[in-house]
Image (cartoon, each protein chain N blue to C red):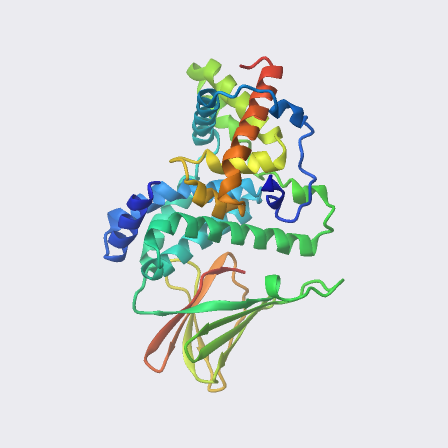
Length: 173
Length: 191
């Protein structure tokens, strides 16, 4: 069985110790299992529903649907694409977004957010944390911008440069 | 959710129909939430992952190539974000830290909501048993079942995207896990 793939790198440590011999010699009745599954579904709806405030946020997120802006896709994330340095702690998170001819390099650390546009150019930069307006920054002629506070939770950058609007993919810093 | 429904709703939402977007949130939120719960993220991390998934889905809405597969798109986005959270935690903490592998919710247990409904006392006891046994099941089974039991029931394609397992192995694993759960309930005399 290929269920060995089902472990996200935790190794086989999550076996519950129940003997698999249980699985054999069982005249299975799918009806029974189906009703157990249905019972679990009801239990999940009672005991572990989606928190109402999250549903509300998801509904409001419709406002983020913007066909006019170009999306700068995440092309590098140090969390998954860089080889970790043993023993190094508090390494800044490096992110690269790319669209067409524009690259946005972002470094997120406890000190805040450092950005660099390539090719270098001035731009107005908005740090979004959700559907509402966010902090406004300016990229200088060298394409650099700074936000003194690190983003908490999901964030995206909306850049206006040369009459064009570019939004980076939503990320969790 | 039905694939043709999802596809139609995505197209309507792209065209500006708020009601279609709401229906997508209603139909796919439990799936996103189940992926978050299956990965046992902390409350704060789980909420952020959930939001990130919906923000990104809204952002990409008009650019999703196969709208009828939006459920899978959203499920794999949720899975990737969950894995990123686990990876960043592992980087900060020694890997063997059992707390990391079993991060329980910071909030009061959800069972409280059932305890409050006294008229449903007998039924709620059964529900609590079920939930306890599900939580105590091996992690692979717990993960699989947690995603499978989201409501409306996800397609196997969506489950596959949510957990990174082959579609073909979901059916057999599901049977095996449900049988295990039933055996545990049996042993407890709760069936």
